[in-house]
Amino acid sequence: DEAEAFLSEAIEHVWDPTQPYPEPPRTPWGDPSLQGYWSFASYTPLQRPDALAGKPLYTAREAIEIFQRQVHSDAAFDPGEVHYDWA
Image (cartoon, rainbow, N blue to C red):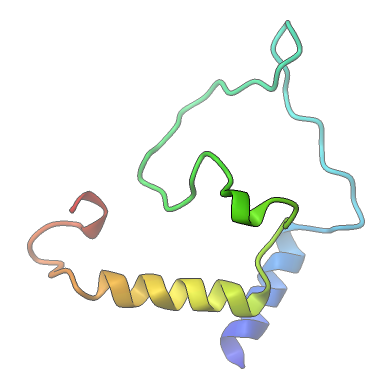
């Protein structure tokens, strides 16, 4: 499947499970630094759902299913009226 091959290649490009995660920047008191610009125009939640605890990535099949659900959901909006992210 072309979509599955694309996702597998993309995941390998951005995430190598054999490499350790880099240390995040820290505040002077030791907490992770959350400084920066935070946009709410994203489908990515700032808190990880409990159902995904301990799961670093979706499988290719899960990612495709989530993408397809979102595409079908977005199709219900008329793009000439308002951008769906703000509806």
